[in-house]
Length: 283
Image 1 (tube, rainbow, N blue to C red):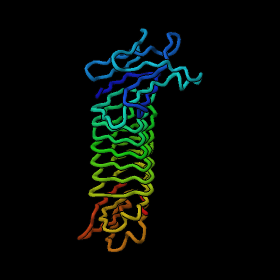
Image 2 (tube, helix red, strand yellow):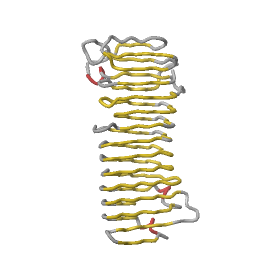
Image 3 (cartoon, rainbow, N blue to C red):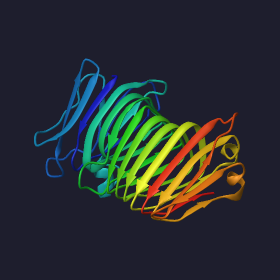
């Protein structure tokens, strides 16, 4: 099995590392409870979708009744266990009304919509979106993310101890909060979104823009030297840490425009920040 396709409404999905060298699928199945799960395994592609008919598992997958306890969250959860060292070529899923948890996985491409929680995993490309008009949460912990596009509307994005490279983030409303985040060739575009990042490490070119809300950044010690800056605010306040101002040029203009620029011959990263009608703090 190399590909997984999900269409879930009331069911939660959890993808985790298997305790042996086999693939296992476990879920609670009762015709009087929740939507019935339709399971298909066809030439290495596993498709899970909620149906009204009785579901069965075929092929090498192991079906286990999910009767561990009476908690509703447990009854709603479908667990897919994948052997250690095995990678997924693609993971596609619509889980707008539920959520998907991805633990200890290596995935080449994703295309996911809904609440997504990624822990200790590697994702090499694709797209994750929160969906339109829904309050969702995208959470990434201890993970490596590359060539990824995040489209977030009125939702929360959380990063913890994560590396994000060659990626694009588009935010509309909601908030982004991060701790110990490394950005490498990343562009973030926000609108009415609060951005708050501590322990930020930078590589190559990183560009963050926001309007009608604030950006608050606290740089890690490894990114305070050899850092080029192009930081500007219009219609808000600008605060830059004194040590980052060494060798910098400042400019002020109409409409409360403020700008700080700095270019170094040996710089290892370039940080571009632009905020309109909001405050910017760089510490």
